[in-house]
Length: 255
Ligand code: 13P
Image (cartoon, protein in one colour):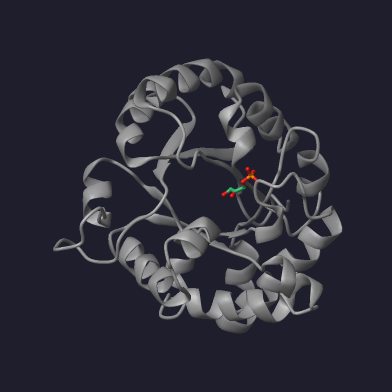
């Protein structure tokens, strides 16, 4: 973390978990536990049908509720999709785009990730843009090339001005939901490489102001060490974001 230069963001990705009633109970439980912990932004990204209940429970607290994806069109024949206009109409400011599970299971590519990102930004949303290498790419020693390519393709057409609304989440795919965490050194190295790409694309000031999170089996035990690294500006947390005590411990590690 480098709080002098950029905001630390601790975000939960609930994935396909929590009914509205469960989300309400969870937010009511965690709200007092994270109250006043203002050294980081706290966000939970929720399934579409759960957003309203989570927002109602979070009202007046330091917790923000986001979405887990968004479509690039404003409206039209895209069964099952939700537009940025719909999300902002519901008061949703943050959205995850490009999560590896979307890329793996739902055919999303850097091209569609880029289109979704541009649409979300145009609607005034803040984007948590996920990228990261798969295991074979890390073993082949091409992680830098992969994250560099993803960063450039996913951000194509995003202006330097719009970068204030972009958070990048570096999520090595081999570390997601596996219990395998990147070592703090690996997280630092790759987040640093992503920042170098941002320097190339936008210059030093923008690169240094951009929050780059680590995601992949971050939990109450390993968060402090990961967050101690200068280029790791927060976390995108899956499993541990469903357990109030674990998520709160990660928020504490960011204080
Ligand atoms: P886990 O924390 O469950 O590994 O998930 C990470 C993730 O995919 C966050 O987006």
